[in-house]
Length: 116
Image (cartoon, rainbow, N blue to C red; front, side, top):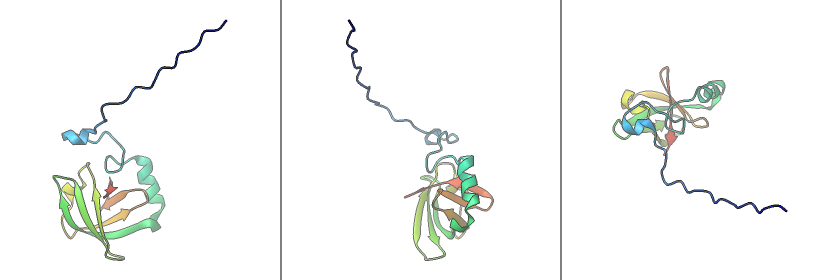
């Protein structure tokens, strides 16, 4: 005679994980807009034809939002980064954006961005 197995219902998650950049520390997440993963950086470097050049229109260091204007079609693009991209950017600065892999290139620096 076998006993019936009792199903244990899944527990609900009541708290959401927060990244350390929310508290002023270095990013502890590789989600879009947070720390740049090495594989993400290498994939973007391996697909050079997908970069698009842009000019910074506005960079808000408090919120991490950067407003770009692409050179190809003049489209405005708003991105967010919690790892400090807005701290190093000034209006008029040239940048490159890799939309497929969510990478913003500022000179030799690379940032993981979230398109807004």
